[in-house]
Length: 194
Image (cartoon, rainbow, N blue to C red; front, side):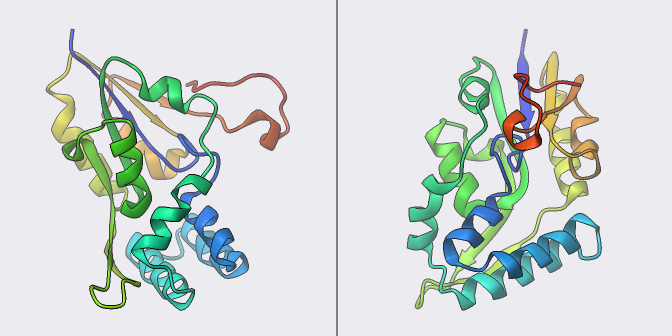
Protein backbone atom coordinates (compact mmCIF):
# COMPACT_ATOMS: atom_id res chain seq x y z
CA UNK A 1 0.00 0.00 0.00
CA UNK A 2 1.36 3.43 -1.00
CA UNK A 3 0.92 6.04 1.73
CA UNK A 4 1.79 9.73 1.82
CA UNK A 5 1.51 12.42 4.47
CA UNK A 6 1.05 16.07 3.46
CA UNK A 7 2.22 18.36 6.27
CA UNK A 8 1.78 22.05 6.91
CA UNK A 9 4.86 23.55 8.60
CA UNK A 10 3.92 26.76 10.49
CA UNK A 11 2.40 25.82 13.86
CA UNK A 12 2.04 22.21 12.72
CA UNK A 13 5.68 21.11 12.66
CA UNK A 14 6.93 24.31 14.33
CA UNK A 15 5.74 25.67 17.67
CA UNK A 16 5.06 29.12 16.26
CA UNK A 17 5.11 30.98 12.95
CA UNK A 18 8.49 30.68 11.25
CA UNK A 19 8.55 34.36 10.31
CA UNK A 20 7.72 35.30 13.92
CA UNK A 21 10.88 33.54 15.11
CA UNK A 22 12.95 35.33 12.47
CA UNK A 23 11.36 38.69 13.39
CA UNK A 24 12.20 38.10 17.04
CA UNK A 25 15.83 37.34 16.18
CA UNK A 26 16.01 40.43 13.93
CA UNK A 27 14.50 42.69 16.59
CA UNK A 28 11.35 43.66 14.71
CA UNK A 29 8.59 41.69 16.46
CA UNK A 30 6.08 44.57 16.86
CA UNK A 31 6.21 45.43 13.14
CA UNK A 32 5.95 41.76 12.21
CA UNK A 33 2.92 41.25 14.48
CA UNK A 34 0.98 43.94 12.60
CA UNK A 35 1.72 42.24 9.26
CA UNK A 36 0.86 38.77 10.58
CA UNK A 37 -2.37 40.02 12.15
CA UNK A 38 -3.51 41.58 8.86
CA UNK A 39 -2.69 38.35 7.02
CA UNK A 40 -4.50 36.12 9.53
CA UNK A 41 -7.58 38.34 9.24
CA UNK A 42 -7.27 38.08 5.42
CA UNK A 43 -6.88 41.84 5.12
CA UNK A 44 -3.80 41.23 2.95
CA UNK A 45 -3.01 38.43 0.48
CA UNK A 46 -0.08 36.02 0.59
CA UNK A 47 1.70 38.17 -1.99
CA UNK A 48 1.15 41.35 0.06
CA UNK A 49 2.33 39.54 3.18
CA UNK A 50 5.52 38.52 1.35
CA UNK A 51 6.15 42.06 0.10
CA UNK A 52 5.70 43.54 3.58
CA UNK A 53 7.94 40.89 5.20
CA UNK A 54 10.63 41.50 2.58
CA UNK A 55 10.54 45.24 3.29
CA UNK A 56 10.74 44.65 7.03
CA UNK A 57 13.48 42.01 6.91
CA UNK A 58 15.51 43.87 4.25
CA UNK A 59 15.55 46.92 6.54
CA UNK A 60 17.02 44.60 9.21
CA UNK A 61 19.63 43.34 6.72
CA UNK A 62 18.42 39.74 6.50
CA UNK A 63 20.91 38.01 4.23
CA UNK A 64 20.91 34.45 2.99
CA UNK A 65 23.71 33.63 5.42
CA UNK A 66 21.84 35.16 8.36
CA UNK A 67 18.68 33.24 7.39
CA UNK A 68 20.71 30.00 7.47
CA UNK A 69 22.17 30.89 10.88
CA UNK A 70 18.67 31.51 12.30
CA UNK A 71 17.34 28.12 11.11
CA UNK A 72 18.03 26.52 14.50
CA UNK A 73 16.12 29.20 16.42
CA UNK A 74 12.76 27.94 15.13
CA UNK A 75 11.38 25.55 17.74
CA UNK A 76 9.76 22.33 16.53
CA UNK A 77 6.69 20.63 17.98
CA UNK A 78 7.26 17.59 20.21
CA UNK A 79 5.80 15.30 17.53
CA UNK A 80 7.77 16.67 14.53
CA UNK A 81 10.67 14.20 14.69
CA UNK A 82 8.26 11.26 14.90
CA UNK A 83 6.12 12.48 12.01
CA UNK A 84 9.12 13.12 9.78
CA UNK A 85 10.59 9.70 10.61
CA UNK A 86 7.54 7.83 9.28
CA UNK A 87 8.30 5.27 6.57
CA UNK A 88 5.94 6.89 4.06
CA UNK A 89 6.30 9.54 1.38
CA UNK A 90 6.34 12.96 3.04
CA UNK A 91 5.36 16.32 1.57
CA UNK A 92 5.76 19.77 3.11
CA UNK A 93 2.89 22.06 2.08
CA UNK A 94 3.32 25.59 3.35
CA UNK A 95 3.23 29.25 2.45
CA UNK A 96 6.25 29.59 4.76
CA UNK A 97 9.67 30.79 3.57
CA UNK A 98 11.99 28.69 1.44
CA UNK A 99 14.97 29.89 3.50
CA UNK A 100 13.60 27.83 6.40
CA UNK A 101 11.58 25.10 4.70
CA UNK A 102 14.27 24.03 2.21
CA UNK A 103 16.84 23.30 4.98
CA UNK A 104 14.12 21.54 7.00
CA UNK A 105 13.31 19.33 4.00
CA UNK A 106 17.01 18.61 3.45
CA UNK A 107 17.51 17.71 7.13
CA UNK A 108 14.73 15.12 6.93
CA UNK A 109 15.58 13.92 3.40
CA UNK A 110 12.35 15.14 1.85
CA UNK A 111 12.88 15.52 -1.92
CA UNK A 112 12.59 19.03 -3.37
CA UNK A 113 9.76 17.85 -5.64
CA UNK A 114 7.76 17.07 -2.47
CA UNK A 115 8.02 20.62 -1.14
CA UNK A 116 5.54 23.46 -1.68
CA UNK A 117 6.60 26.79 -0.13
CA UNK A 118 7.01 30.49 -0.82
CA UNK A 119 10.32 30.96 -2.61
CA UNK A 120 12.26 33.95 -1.27
CA UNK A 121 15.20 35.36 -3.22
CA UNK A 122 18.23 37.31 -2.07
CA UNK A 123 20.07 39.98 -4.05
CA UNK A 124 23.15 38.50 -5.74
CA UNK A 125 25.36 41.44 -4.83
CA UNK A 126 24.20 42.48 -1.35
CA UNK A 127 22.80 39.03 -0.40
CA UNK A 128 19.86 40.84 1.30
CA UNK A 129 16.32 39.49 0.90
CA UNK A 130 14.64 41.11 -2.11
CA UNK A 131 11.65 39.23 -3.57
CA UNK A 132 9.40 36.19 -3.36
CA UNK A 133 6.92 34.04 -5.25
CA UNK A 134 4.11 33.76 -2.72
CA UNK A 135 2.11 30.58 -2.22
CA UNK A 136 -1.56 30.86 -1.25
CA UNK A 137 -4.25 28.38 -0.16
CA UNK A 138 -5.32 27.61 -3.74
CA UNK A 139 -1.76 26.86 -4.84
CA UNK A 140 -1.28 24.50 -1.89
CA UNK A 141 -4.60 22.78 -2.65
CA UNK A 142 -3.62 22.31 -6.32
CA UNK A 143 -0.20 20.99 -5.32
CA UNK A 144 -1.79 18.30 -3.13
CA UNK A 145 -4.66 17.48 -5.51
CA UNK A 146 -2.16 16.78 -8.32
CA UNK A 147 -0.29 14.24 -6.16
CA UNK A 148 -2.82 12.35 -4.04
CA UNK A 149 -3.88 10.10 -6.93
CA UNK A 150 -0.52 8.30 -6.81
CA UNK A 151 -1.31 6.90 -3.34
CA UNK A 152 -3.73 4.41 -1.81
CA UNK A 153 -3.94 6.43 1.41
CA UNK A 154 -3.11 10.08 2.08
CA UNK A 155 -3.07 12.00 5.34
CA UNK A 156 -3.17 15.79 5.40
CA UNK A 157 -2.16 17.63 8.58
CA UNK A 158 -2.52 21.36 9.14
CA UNK A 159 -3.25 23.71 12.01
CA UNK A 160 -5.72 26.19 10.53
CA UNK A 161 -8.91 25.28 8.66
CA UNK A 162 -8.92 28.64 6.85
CA UNK A 163 -5.40 28.33 5.44
CA UNK A 164 -4.83 24.55 5.43
CA UNK A 165 -8.36 23.23 4.95
CA UNK A 166 -8.23 23.55 1.15
CA UNK A 167 -5.21 21.23 0.91
CA UNK A 168 -5.99 18.74 3.70
CA UNK A 169 -9.48 18.26 2.25
CA UNK A 170 -7.93 16.53 -0.77
CA UNK A 171 -6.45 13.82 1.48
CA UNK A 172 -8.10 10.56 2.51
CA UNK A 173 -7.65 11.53 6.16
CA UNK A 174 -7.65 15.28 6.91
CA UNK A 175 -6.30 16.22 10.37
CA UNK A 176 -5.64 19.36 12.36
CA UNK A 177 -2.84 19.55 14.93
CA UNK A 178 -3.21 21.03 18.36
CA UNK A 179 -0.44 23.30 19.51
CA UNK A 180 1.93 22.85 22.42
CA UNK A 181 -0.34 22.16 25.39
CA UNK A 182 1.79 24.25 27.75
CA UNK A 183 1.61 27.26 25.45
CA UNK A 184 -2.12 26.79 24.91
CA UNK A 185 -2.86 26.33 28.62
CA UNK A 186 -3.92 22.69 28.44
CA UNK A 187 -1.46 20.41 30.19
CA UNK A 188 -2.70 17.14 28.69
CA UNK A 189 -0.40 15.60 26.11
CA UNK A 190 -1.63 16.31 22.59
CA UNK A 191 -0.77 15.04 19.16
CA UNK A 192 -2.36 15.71 15.78
CA UNK A 193 -6.08 14.96 15.94
CA UNK A 194 -9.19 15.50 13.81
